[in-house]
Length: 236
Image 1 (cartoon, rainbow, N blue to C red):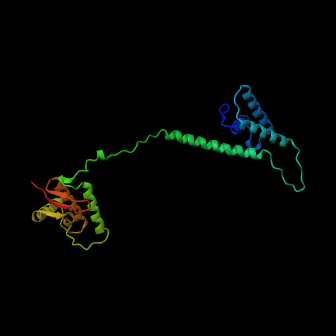
Image 2: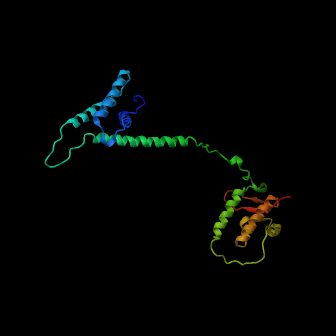
């Protein structure tokens, strides 16, 4: 329960210590006890409901004050007597650390409130490329996945024993070659079109197939999931 906005007896004590500009490591116990009891008395006069923890702290302060008034004994073994204020000081320091940490969290919470997030949503409605290619059953994603698996199998990162030619290969040249193949076979496995294994040839072949499908020169089909992808002549 709060008393005049204080979060507990330690909070009230810290307030009184700061108001008095007192060193927390050298508490003037008599002075701080008087201030604390005066504050509690004023709250009682105002008919405020005082939590029992505040009254317990009053008793603790009076006990510490009485111990401070007792004469000190000088033992032969020169052992120093424990300071009656030590436990209370440690509790006050620990509570102050807690308050500082709470303040830091409040600042972080305030900064977090300035950030607005959007709930995840399905973005499939914005995707325009997830369509079958040229009326076939294969999507562009299917074709890209098949092409990637093909590349992985060929291990392009390893040296290849292939015939190197200085003649530049263009997409149009490769399209003409594929037209000739389809004019003879009518239907051909997608993978069979990659008959020469070098990077330039494979990339140009893939682009040629995409362009031919886009321009209705061939249809790309796949009967069932994971079946071979087939390229065939488009029906006029």
